[in-house]
Length: 114
Length: 113
Image (cartoon, rainbow over all chains, first blue to last red; front, side):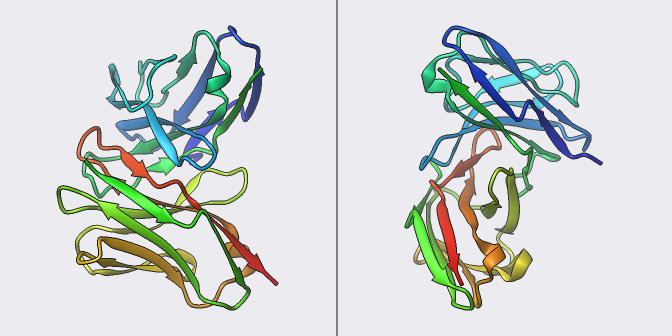
């Protein structure tokens, strides 16, 4: 099992460009999350999904969009890239709805907006 | 609302010395607490978690953490540091809403030979 995979690993964008960060999982988990990690700030939740066809906003959703058409995939879309979106992005999954259940993280995508 | 505070953004220890990484939490309900480790250029990996069973929780790689309700703390310890322990460590609390996590800012551990 590959677990949680993210592509690309690195990307440089110009201001105003758009891109999609891909996240795929083969763990058959219903819950999926997108976080961004800024230096000294920990991780902040961008969007999450509790199952195919259901998404909702997290703490910092502005400038991003998501979709969840299948259980396996949860892409994150940046429509008009801004320097403030320079960050490392992590996708995570969780198998059950309990608060004690573990989240499993992908390796991350490092995005730079110039 | 749930939140965690990690005291000390950088901790440096000598190889073989005790590792102590501090985490204090705030929660309006009984918390579920986690420690994650992040090695360079990798995602986060679960070290251990507290889920209201035993207050002393043992994790991978010789780490353990003790839940102290009276101190609202969940400090991470390891008796003897190894060079391979050098990484960033995150404390997290399971939030009430969204089933997501609230993470601390992280503590970078350096191990000196």
